[in-house]
Length: 509
Image 1 (cartoon, rainbow, N blue to C red):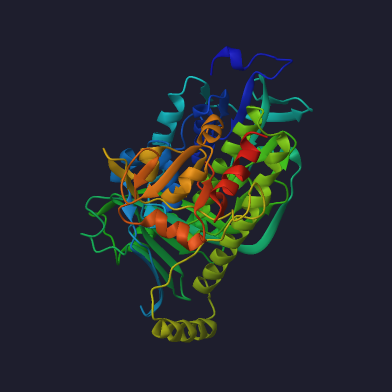
Image 2: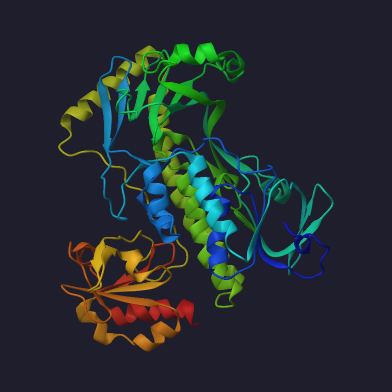
């Protein structure tokens, strides 16, 4: 970081200071930087963390990465999951969750990744923005805010003033502690040994399970392929104090010997994690917000921890942009928690339920679980899929709160995914016949992209060759849907003019 960012200031020098340079902080900083705001990222470590932690994201998050222009770079590093299996100690199938290779967001419903690959891609993009500065080896030691700004002090005696601060600094968040924010414990806490391997051959060639939870009372285990030639094994520990003994190299190899030999792979990392369920009571305090693990931590059994943090960044970014540009007052930032917390709690509840089923240690209770789930599996007539909740109340008009879809479209010259052809931001998606009812000039002046869907491309209309968007509007009972930059629906309904009017209310108040 240059000296200009660490001088003593009496007025805000940067628009936003982001504390924490993980995927959530980098995503937020990149979005705000791309929107033209000055951003500084403060990270206590001397460089990117560089070791695997989170391992999965869904199609919604891949769509967000697509919007940042990172999809092509990341695709070769990913492993697409087609299914997630839960078996008992005898190998019997208890649950099979099917994941589509192309879901509603236009991407695979579940992708496994190597976190250092994601962080490098995000960092390179973020660092390329002229209005974003990233400072490694900078530990924030105090936070003081008034009505106009937030002042941060660092361990080396420097200070920084910003209009807003967002704490993306993980489960042991300094920012959360500095605000005095208490966490609610939802009652899940289990110690696990997490072992990451770099494979010398593809996982499929080695016959490794792609995504498997083993509910064995003698030792609950998780085995997942986490990216191109990457594999993770997780073993539940009897007690957190067991870690020092269990992390020994020979002990780790003895645990995985049924699946891997030393000729097949190298150990990358062995770590102890306590899988827990925590939610901060407040996600905003004046000019300071919390995001990602600083705001919530959930067990990994649904693979939604990182996804939830990226959703936080997407939600904050477009609202912060509206505030910084003077389009909305700062009260709109209160809708961040009101929207995101119910979603997080819904996902967390499902993850906890799955985790409790998986980690039963009492053989009698495990047999009862097996009996129930085997009967349920036999009775299923369609594959099981996890449906995530809609957002809670917040910045919406009528019919808002659900995630929008993305399919293939054609503008007459190119065919590709919707966002690649029409861009992001605020969009009004309409059936072709509804276009004449709209005041297109007003929408354009407000920065709204209007996209009509029809059988062929012409003007503001794109061809919808698979019918994805027309079916979606029909399912909503709508001729138009206003979509926010985070890809959630702001408003939808049968009267396109009314939907447009609702959108203009927040963009041209």
